[in-house]
Length: 471
Image (cartoon, rainbow, N blue to C red; front, side, top):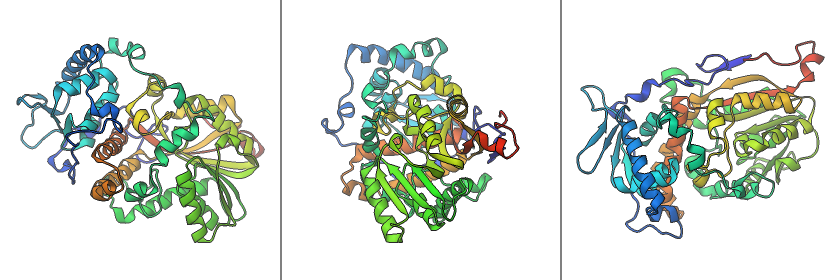
C-alpha cells in the first residue's frame, strides 16, 4: 500500500537517523554572497532585530543559554569560531572538514538565544550576530540532533519558559485570512523571483533518484513540478467531466492542468495576490469557463465534488482544526470520489512536543502553522470522519532539492529583490527560512507525503476490506 522513495515502508526517509552528510566537504560552501545587515537597522520595520534584548531575563537566561549552546557544540560535527580566536566543536582533520559558524557578536547571540530560544537563533542570524559558510549545512547539524541539544531535565521546563502561539494567530475563520496574507500576499513579484515558470510553491517530484537527485538542475524544475501535480490528479481520478475542488489555489498551475484534462475546477484561496494572478493565468490559457477561483475559507465551501485536491495547505490549518479540514472534505466529496493531498509531515513524537510552541517560523514566515504527522492524519480521519488513508508516497528528499533550487535562484537575484523593496534583513530572513527548511528534509526531521483517501465505505462496496491496514 505504501510507496516510498528510498525509505522503509510507512516511515519517512531518514527519519530518526543521522545523515551521512553531517561531515561535510568544502564544496558545500554556498555559491553566493549573503547580504550583510546595515549599520543601523530600522526599528519600525524590524523591532526585534534592531535592538539586542537587555532585560534581566535576557541577561540571566542568556548566560544559561550560552553555556548550554557551548556544551552542545563541543560534541557536534561543527566549528564555531569566536572573534577572540577560540574554536568550539570538532577540529577539522586532513580530508574532512565541518560546517563553520562564525560568531560576530557572541554576547548579542547569547542574549537573543536566552530571551527567545530558537526564535533568538533565527533573529540573531537576521541581525548578523553570526554567519555561516553554508547555512544549510550548519542547520543540518542542529536538525539531526534537535531532541538532544538541550539536557532532558531542561526540556521538561520548555512549556513554562518558551512562548506559546498567540490567540490572535489561531486559525479561526476570523484570523485565517490575516495569517495567510502575511506570507502569500507579500508580493507576486517576490515569489516569481525564485519560483519556476509554473509558479508552484511546493515540493517537486523529480525523475531522478539517489545521488543523481542531489544534483538536479533548474532546467528540469518546471517539468518536475508538473509531474508532482499530474500524479496527484491521477490518484484523484481527475479526467474529462470530473468536478474538482482545490483547497489552496497557489498561483493556479494545478487548476490549469486539471482543466486541460477536461475537468471543471472550483478553487479556493485566502490570498488576494494569488487569486489575482491565478485568475489571470487561467484566462490567458483559455480556461475561464471551466475554472473558478474564489477568495473563500475552506470551511465555507458548499457543493459536491468527484475529486478534492489540496497541496501543502494542511500545514496552515492549525492542529485544532485538522478534524474540521477533513470533515469538510468528507462533506463535499461525492460517493465514490477520491481525495489527494500533499502534506509536509513530522514524526509524531516531535508533533506532540512542539504543537503549541511559538517558533521563529511562526513569528516571521507562517503564523498559525503546524506540521502534522502521518499518525495524526490517520487517527483523525479514522476517528472523526468516514475517510480512510489508502496510499502514501514519501518524497522528502525531493523537497530538499526543491528548496536548494529556490535558495540558489533567490540569492542569485538579490539585486532584483532589493529593488522590490525587500532589504538585507528580509533577505537574510528568507535565506534562513529556505535553509532551515531544507535542513529539515535533508536530515529526515521533516518529510513530505502525497496521501490518497476515500470514503470508508468505498472498499466495502467493492468487496474489499473496510479500512486500510496499519502501517
